[in-house]
Length: 98
Image (tube, rainbow, N blue to C red):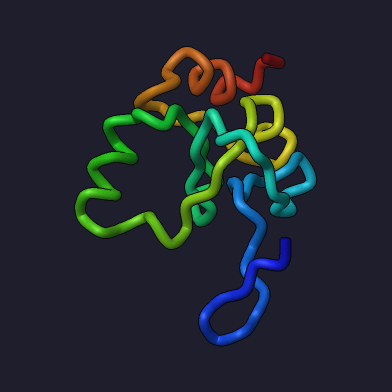
C-alpha cells in the first residue's frame, strides 16, 4: 500500500523510529523501551521523572530519541540517566564495565 501525505509526498511507514547501535535511525513495528536526549547523549526509562518534567515544559521533545534496549543505547554512545537509572549511572561514572 502506497501511503501518501496530502501534499503527495510519501508518508513514513507505520511504526516507530528508533536509533540503532550505530546511531542511525530505523523504523520498527515495536516501540522503544528507553528514551534518550540527543544533545546530552543520555538515555533512561520512558517514565523518568526528570525527562517528563522537561517534556511538560516544552523542552527536550525535539531532541528526543528512542532505543529498543539499553545495550543499543550504550552502543550508540549514550550514558545512563542519574535520576531513573542511578545504579547504572554510578557504574558508568566509575568507568566500570556493565
